[in-house]
Length: 276
Image (tube, rainbow, N blue to C red; front, side):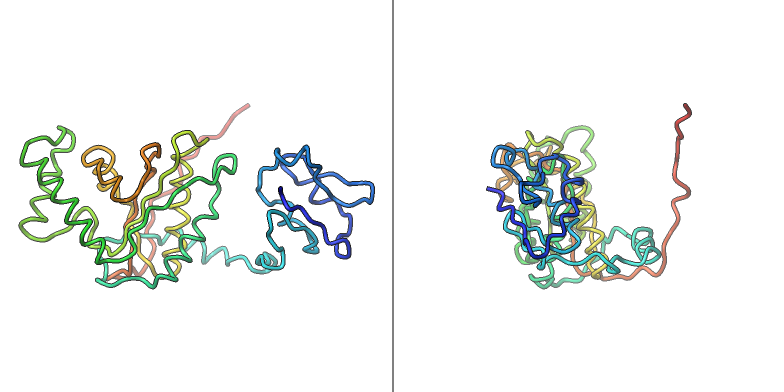
């Protein structure tokens, strides 16, 4: 059941929820109140547009109280500051050797979870290493597995460079894969989801921008994605990633050991305009 409820004292019968429903399943009943009939409830996208658009907070759905939502009126970020955040985003490759507060990590993940998904499928899974002590163990296991492949000359031709990465770790203690970060996040989604790869990438992009606004550094970890996808797939089990899941991407994160002072410029956008 959708738990679709209307506060009759607050509802103004404006019809905004009806007009904005993507599934077109909300309608006025005989009392001129918005309703969703039982036979139409299975068609609900669960997007909560109706709750979000109601100007008087008269509508609740899926058990969500509109009074517990945040108001958007005069509460959005300053556009210039938001642009600076986007332009100033940096991949961080030097981290402090300390754990982030668990409450901060939870806030980051809960916020990233709000990111859009194809057909509102919402099946992205976050596999997390949230303590540096545990990532130290996982890091060691990863390099040992890669070392065995390199020693046996079993690295694929296009991944032979991993032998040099392993050597840097073994001989100098330089961690090129995880960059010494204390935490690791992997986003995955079922392969039968509508858009599993985009869903994962979008969620991590949300995570990254919010993280950097809170002073948390991140790095898109392509080296580890190659590792877990192609070289040491048994690491999936260590991270409790189901076999039927597609790994979207990995992201290392933590408190930066450095601070960037200014934005950079990648040049103007490449734009191709339609000509009718």
